[in-house]
Image (cartoon, rainbow, N blue to C red; front, side, top):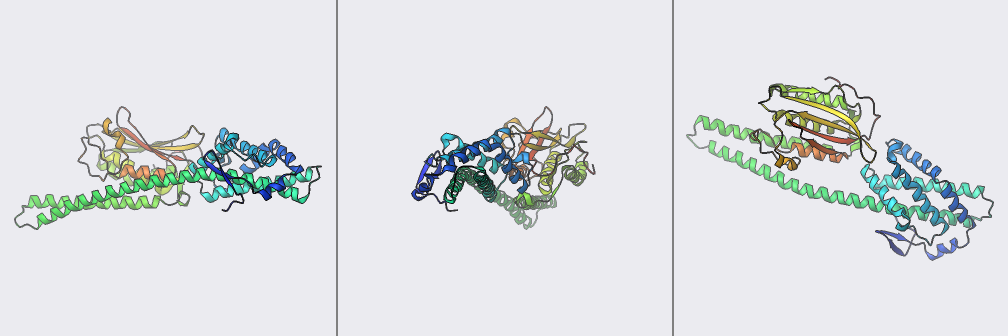
Length: 426
């Protein structure tokens, strides 16, 4: 988008532009400007509510999540104060000294955290511009000060200039965070590709070596069975990796395009699919009788729970008289005032050595404990982390006195929160 401003100067870390000289000439004698500036300040709460209502009507988000805390909601009047000051004196460029640029940047950071895209931010400020330009007309109609068409256009242009400057600050912060996120994901992808190549090379090498030995005449039957089992184990391991990668690629799609289900139903489906595996492993798999009845991305939550529950089954403690696994959930409010759902898989298994807990969510990492001979690819927990991160959440782990608790937190982006309900089909 080309700005009508020329002559760039710096304000903090954001480049802002002064109006051209021919535009400034229009600003010299504008009797409406001071009145409009005063009315903007006096009506900032009303204008803020108009903006909030219009945004909430366009996005799939409750009004109290558009500006989820009182502090953030208080930012908007500060932005309008900056616009009012600019209308009164365009030479006093909107700057970080007024706190306006800082508040605009915080808004950009919030929109990034909420999963907005650049187009939605542009539309958000387009809405603000339309509201303020309508307000200019209202003030002009109600004012007794003589005001010609040129003066009215000059005031409207001042409003447009100020909104553009604030949009520039918000977008700059938003795009910087997007750039940082893309860079971090590229670094993780390169590391992932290196680890994946190493894993497949090792498995293929082991399988090829075993196959070559099988061709040697005179190999005993017992050895042949051992080599054949090695080949099958490695091929199944590669198949499991590819299946996980396929699921992970599906999660990478835009979260708002995912099929959504209620959390109790997703948990019940995972429990149904893995109950036989748990029975074979001698583990009791149970669902908490109260799981938050909120809407979640079906494939994401089921994939995460499947990985966590299957891990818990594999690493159950055979020395424990009654090994168990429980899927449970709860609602929490973050420090920023946002609501999130916590989903956990708790067990009384063998746990993880303290020295290795910091590496749990790394790709291909497997803890060196007394169950180190258990089959696995080391991808499960990293897939959980990647999946919930893609949806704006985070992976969680706790270690009580016995066993472990793995889980994840997801923001409540969709659906009304209701009373916790028993999981369907438990």
